[in-house]
Image 1 (cartoon, rainbow, N blue to C red):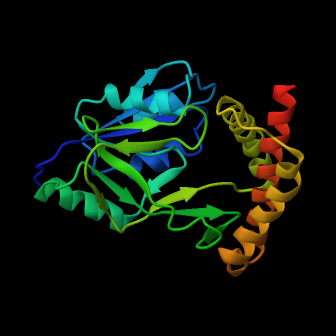
Image 2: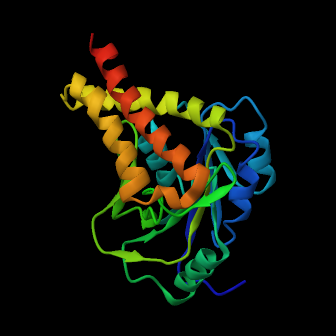
Length: 251
């Protein structure tokens, strides 16, 4: 093993991730431990994670940011590498993290690009890449924020930039994408209401159209072929459902 100047705890939150969890854990060889916080999986997620050496904690689901902060708080080390169960470290990113462990850190958190695979294709346009995320951070200087959706790490200090990719294995089918969208747009609608925003007819009519144009044309989603076209339409549908559900929920 490479001599370590920095100890890192890997953190993953899960629910019914037996198809993906092994791939995520096995990619985190640079971590000195892995903590999995599971919110009641009915499949073999916990057994697979335990069998791969992860420390598994069971806890009811309180929301994305809160669950991820809980995982970080229950890690053994202050430096946290947080992945979702459908993500893995690329070999180049893992090598960069090994170098940080050996040479020491100079920042309070590190952002890295995330590349998504959608319907079997790696997506490089449409606003999906580089999609930089802070996923390696000192928990004494950073924490997850975001009450509903689109949680992110807020760092009170200097953020460094890594170049290797997180590989994000998203939807394998349109049916899976639609199921995920239904859940996320419900949460996004709650966020609209909580922020005191209105869901007007103009939002329902014009925002989805602009979302498609921005994604497919200005962010060059057309360069990703059929998948890019589908992403643009699904982004427009997401926008429509978010505001439609906000109107429905607010009465």
